[in-house]
Length: 152
Image (tube, rainbow, N blue to C red; front, top):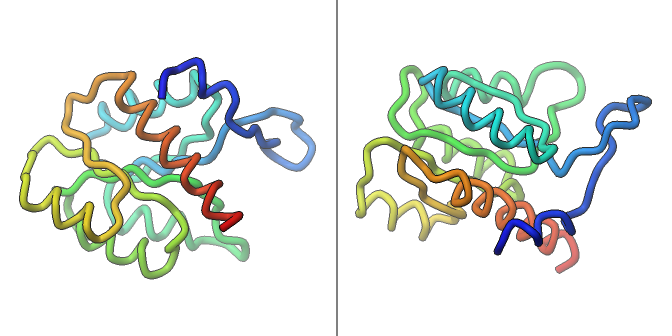
């Protein structure tokens, strides 16, 4: 998908009365603050709503806190993290949020793990440092696939 197609993606209104539109909610799970910041800023420039978590445990807590669980359209997660690592978090996300697409963004490429995760339903497997266009395409494709699944 080229970037001109992303402008055709559905827009949502953020907040009940704010009137701001966004393309979708993305949870970025990575123990490296600089990576989270770069990914967040890249996605926010294209009107994604982005939430950050430093590890799998914090991501799970964010998704489940309060009376109304957070609405997230795509999850981007690292693999090697403290507390709950990426593969454990992926297991949880797939069990509790099966309709939310998962993208792995890792600094330690592992072909066997990538193949396992793709077979288990992970949408994409990206290696740091990821090119901006590749990240945006992966998120747009995951979001579009999720929206298509709503109608199938």
